[in-house]
Image (cartoon, rainbow, N blue to C red; front, side, top):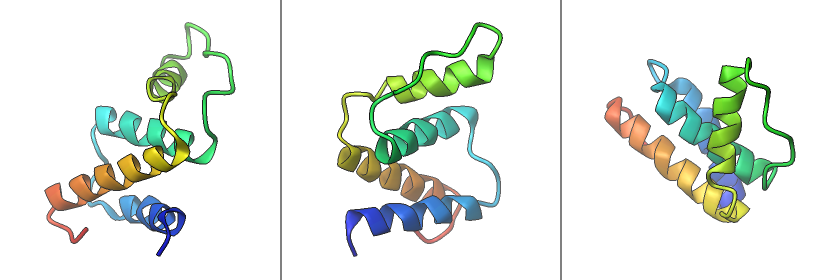
Length: 90
């Protein structure tokens, strides 16, 4: 299985967690997912009233230097950690 297929598999597996990950974990996942699927940030930072949008944008911007493959690999690793912490098979 290639990296892209494994990434897509874990993008689905994360949806099976019994409870939602913490906000910090969600931002880590979001940033890595966007970097893996879109690449470097390609939008301007949301306005000051969009607190959630700014947090998501900042999480993506924070890993801007990673390649798409690195972002996929880090995403998979994070999902595996979350699955194991929930007592589920990774």
